Image 1 (cartoon, rainbow, N blue to C red):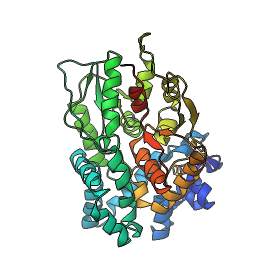
Image 2: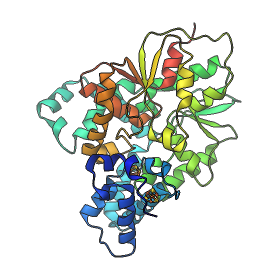
Image 3: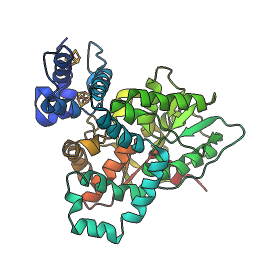
Image 4: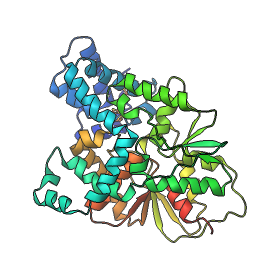
Length: 383
Ligand code: SF4
Ligand code: SF4
């Protein structure tokens, strides 16, 4: 089937208007390559690599083409054809980004770096404009705002386990304590293990499916019979997709299904809040209506979906580091109309989106907060 109904849904096609940057075009390229009709040139690889794996295309496909699997499979095939040292090099840095301990150290580094003389020197030397360094350096300010060291709370028996993923401490540090507070107020006994783990998504999307699977296996082995409730929608979407899907819930979806005590009336807040809907929540978890339901509990809040919510913001796991130009173009298309609406706060359930959006806010010189919805709920809890 080559109906093309997926084309209007594709953010990269919307940017370039090039069929090769569309879902249909990419499928044809993969078919041609697998059949031996096309060589894997850098041009062909560029069209495949510019795919965000946002899977918006899948939502409109009448033939239920599993586009994400096709792209992950193509990536794994390409990685397998790399030389051993090149493969090892690629895997090392993706594995490092999937390592909770390394992430936590990156968070600590970013906190001390962001306002240091070293950062000023880097700006003076224009390293923040260096094509290879700028995608990393631009995130340090956002990480500095979000990174926190979490304090584990393990219990002998609990109702759920809070899953913070490999980057929770770095990208959603404030949300961890907030989530524990909200659980507490709802009478939910939540376990926060001292050792964070990774869902394996970044490894899988970068072609290292075996390594990704070993993360998921470790997660299954470490797990109990308790549901996993995760802070980041992307991690939960990944855990739900594994061959043995985990009993995993995105935290807002979970909280919205709980019965809230009548007496738990949240404090009012006069603020304009835009709700960002990550692709993982929209395309893989059925949408983020739960975020709107939960935040509607806060009286006087002016709540609206973020403009252009149907398009990916460009974060997409490691995409913002690997394809910085496209990531910046996608971010601008989404953030510019959002900032024009003069919000006080943007909420998002995805850790990578949070960093990308906040870095964009900082680059625009604005003081809009970018936080997880549970942080807002926790702030408005009665004392
Ligand atoms: S996954 Fe997203 S970026 Fe990739 S082809 Fe589909 S809609 Fe386009
Ligand atoms: S992927 Fe689906 S929507 Fe896109 S061209 Fe093929 S059949 Fe049509």
